[in-house]
Figure 1 (cartoon, helix red, strand yellow):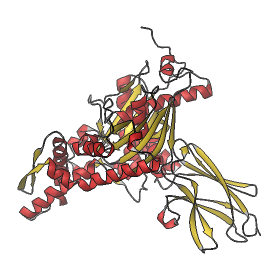
Figure 2 (figure 1 turned 90 degrees about the vertical axis):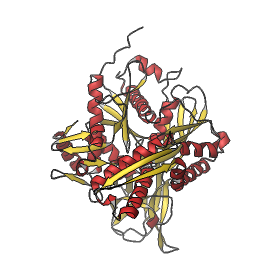
Figure 3 (figure 1 turned 90 degrees about the horizontal axis):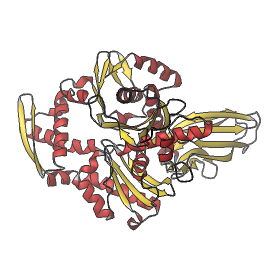
Figure 4 (figure 1 turned 60 degrees about the vertical axis):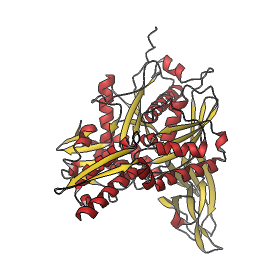
Length: 527
């Protein structure tokens, strides 16, 4: 066996699945093979739980195990808060206020530290995954989290895209259409991917980033709490320690019901206890409305793609919740399409992200003419003609601008970049000023499918000073540029003047705050 060629410079890229309940990290080895990197506890996945202990941040299983004993020191499910400002979400420990980005950075730092220890070399670059239905604020927050952890974030990619990369890496010679059903601990995505001519292309996507395994857990938690209250006249959820204990018991029961038809839950609080039996049938009946949400989103995506189930070749299940029999039964019932069982629901996303990491570095090689990876790795990710595997994502939300309608005397939203447009994309349009003698042209950027501004999400404002005495309808050129990370840049041009603004939205951290946070996080030992 030959030794792989050495690169002229050293850069190590990893793929990170930054999950709501569990994370995973992967890399591509010297022979071009994707591998999951175990953490320092020899586990292949790491719980997304942080325990603050003085100046230490304990991340993973130990933090999760201590959640009941010290619930006030615990942070979990932080992924559901990504994109929020500090005013909307924060946690305070030892006199310091942490944003969602900073908390996620601590989790990523744990993954990075463990990877460097395992690989015996510095990890410099990363591709981090997000739910396909994440908006730009959530994507930007994820990008910031990776930077705060000391990584050069090559790209933020969609989790279903990463899963399709992991699945399709050895199937690129076989054209097929893959339906990716990704139900994790806190988010749900459905995406249709087309694998064709060494090109993996996203066709349609939809989802709910506040629907996931936690909602199934909460069904059990609330049921046990109600039964406890009926029997003892007390609510066990009012105590944080009791809630954390009950949540852990609910999670165990849910997992047991995936392989058994019945389980027993015992919960004690304030010197009193209950012992309750729960059957799989009863549990599935209580969760039926959650499964109906998933089913509806699946049907919407098929309609958006303009496909029939007979045109889908494989179902790819990712996320731990897809182990539940009721989830698999639902998918089988609506599709009658074979499920691909050759990828791990827990590991596929991280592996696909690692593949994208190498593709990004190889693309940089081609642009800069500098070798950073061995030839065997390039061979693994190239077609016969030497071209790299191509991955194309689409926009999952429409990006528009608020305009004034003289006829109806009201504002409306004009779509600049429509949902399902391939990215990266740049689009230009020219608009007239709403009235004469305007001092500034103010561009209000929104996201959403409605033409009513109040029904869309405001993203930001970009304005430009105008020359005096302009008549109504004077032209202003507007450019929307949406990059591979699905981060939006807006450019306003008028009469030789230009303003260029990256719409980072209200993610809570400005550039100066990122610098401060980076320095602050260096003072925290992550273990």
